[in-house]
Image (cartoon, rainbow, N blue to C red; front, side, top):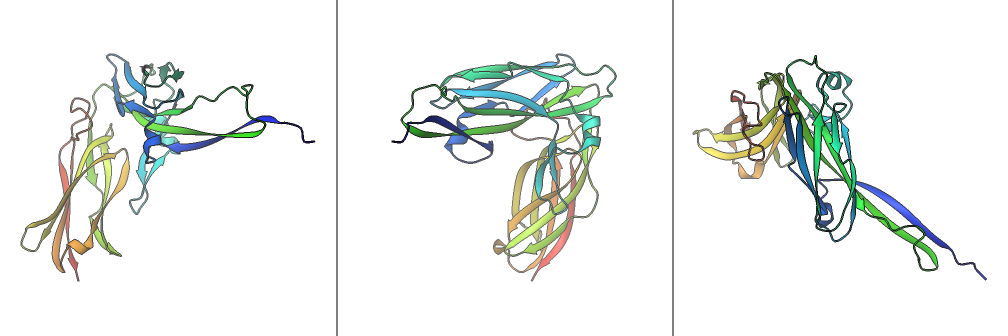
Length: 280
């Protein structure tokens, strides 16, 4: 006769916050970017449990920033020791509380305090705030059915940005090479190689305008963007919407965006670059 076995198997699956679907919205964070300055040295954000399950929440801090490869493909760079030594605030920030449980519908205010060294130069420093959440797991000793019971526990990692402003801050965007326009399959790919100037990340908007030979606008779009150090900003347009002929493309950077208060954005001069291209 087989013996009854009582066992709980926990399988942890790590997912990023941008994973689509209703499950990813179990725990939400507001705001998605937190700005702290030397006058107050503290800030707060909300963690909200919108699910029908109790959620365990944990906070960690790590230096990183959005970067791109030479083709303009975006990724998060967590391995840049030089930039980390110059701009990281990950070791200065503390969160209270850092580990907590939220019941369904409950919200928690998290208070962040920053204690930077006294000799840091003026500028903006940053960290990534990682908020990991998962449903509360029942005790292993809880009564289970005979045999093996498998429980799949999804862990969601939401990454938001934390900034610390010290003294005088400046920023800007400079084109390091001309724009390039290439046709890849059915897409028109515009690449803008840029670098950041000043001592703070550029947080703003990027505009693409395409005009035909008569100067008429045939395509226009706006995207929120960041330039932390240097980057190749890549924009793709469906080439089928453009007839064969001569065109010009302009990419413009402005230091304003709808999801960040204008008081938190370091202002910069508007810059633009343009080039001409032909579609056969």
